[in-house]
Image (cartoon, rainbow, N blue to C red; front, top):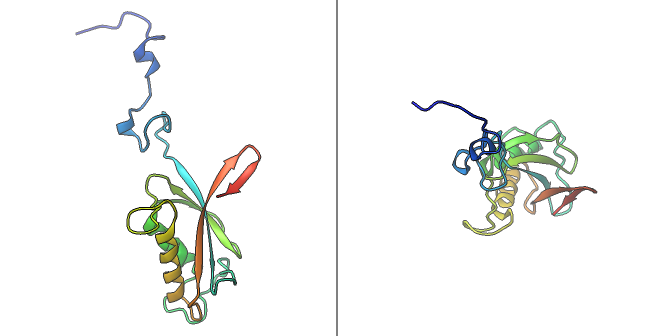
Length: 156
């Protein structure tokens, strides 16, 4: 049986101590840490009832004509959970809310399994909101990615 008889500092073993191989993490390359932390994405979800009137996600009661008896925030959150693993939900506001989702679980598909936007997610949110209230035949939803820089937050 081999025995330890020296210092591992400066060796390959010492340099890789505590590091995780890409197979053991949720990401690959430089985008992982010794803690196995997942990459997270911040998104903003907004919606309208008719193309111009914002859905007030801060309302704590179900909208009139609701067939499901839950708030619009609940409907949008549940729909988002079907498209990505949700880590955090910001407080719902009068025009939208912010969510933190796992980068490797989000569906960015615009149609089918391709695309680089959130088309399918937006369509699903619209359909759910239409079912949760009356007079929403022209409902819209927009999901945008938030990015952080030295000068603040930007929405792309």
